[in-house]
Image (tube, rainbow, N blue to C red; front, side):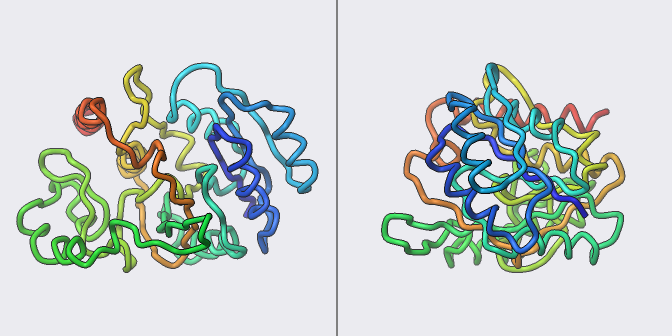
Length: 271
């Protein structure tokens, strides 16, 4: 199965580290689709040439993060389309494992996602993610199934990532350590069948800078189109821990973005 990797990037330095890890995969990617913003295209192309990677480099001139994801989604040609971030480092068997997983799960699975593990690159030390904290895992196991039930339409997804009855994104008891049905977990580590992602798109809106929950927005579209989505903890990717990371930071506009996403879910579900 040919595998395309889609990467939005705003930093050639971080991107270079990711690309080196992709060049060292046991199964090399068919192509790497890189959507750059405020990064010199020629510089990225030179790095790809040195690493002997087949790269498609697209320059993003408008929009935010999810616009870049849609650009990459449309340009990818592989049988499997894997999305990650420019501040990730892929272990050598990462792409091979996705190929094996899609073959083993069968034709009805449109998306497989896995976890990320924070890496302090300065100290070369692995760090726990919020999902790993004991009190969070305990809450998800004991209280969430009672207090934050999924919408009935997603009842079989309640152990993984799901939408509750107020259309908030929730993580169930299997996240992050057990296999389960789940909406896509994290954008840094999710893979789709090309035929499934062709008819699904990431949300775009003038005020969606980070678009929290954009992964789940795509997952809902897959399910509406007859596909299933699963989570496995067994194909992790390293994720450089940065305090200024756009995906982890929150400011005064964050709640507004969450409200926009909830409205977007509602519009999907009422069709």
